[in-house]
Length: 274
Ligand code: MF3
Ligand code: CO
Ligand code: CO
Image (tube, rainbow, N blue to C red; front, side, top):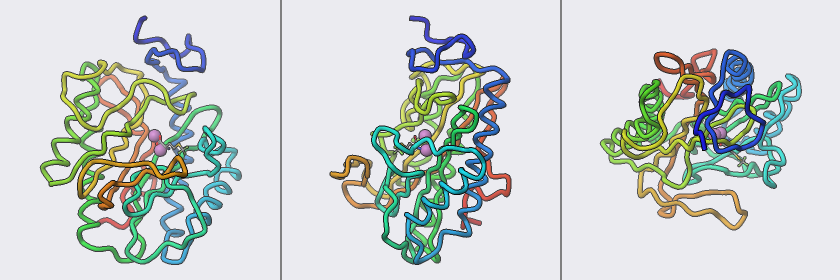
């Protein structure tokens, strides 16, 4: 099968071919990711000790509702919330609940809004009040991993160059890269090809081409890389209960690099870090 297809010729289902989007797709992604980024900006003032993750979820739903944006996670494969809230040793897919956040927690909030059919997927880490230096360092390392992965994106490179950049830096900082979850193609679908691994070698994976749209969303642990999924079927935690962090952007490959669709309009891409 041909591995690439012009997005306008492709049905909205997983065909196994990597879509190459034009201006229409890039415009759609800009709009969807702008709503997601504005919501993640607004959450900076919401996240504090005592707030429950269900209250965060309610805020995300309302924020979208007022802007004709639908949370993609709502009723996605049996998931019933508008975002994921992953605290401390929770790697990803934490389910919002009635438990209040506590001073010193670090929480990832992952939001995907669908606007006019396009998916804007992004997440950031939020410190809850004052956090320990070790936690702050993990957030710094993880955000830098995301940005180094993004810098590796250009036509002609392979997806493995992204993972290689992330893994090399994470391990140089004595952190580990989660292997069990990866970034993904997206657009009019939430999760599509290609998989974007956050580890590996530059000569691995499909070649990047102008028009490809995908996420990069490294999960970095202070301890060992291994994770397990709890009995709720969603919550992924580090097996050694070590602290873990994640940041995510949706990007599009351009002629000479990439466009980050989900950048914060207020410069709040790393809330709480200086
Ligand atoms: N937003 C997540 C991602 O980055 C996916 C969440 S799916 C859910 O791909 F069902 F867990 F919400
Ligand atoms: Co994603
Ligand atoms: Co996400």
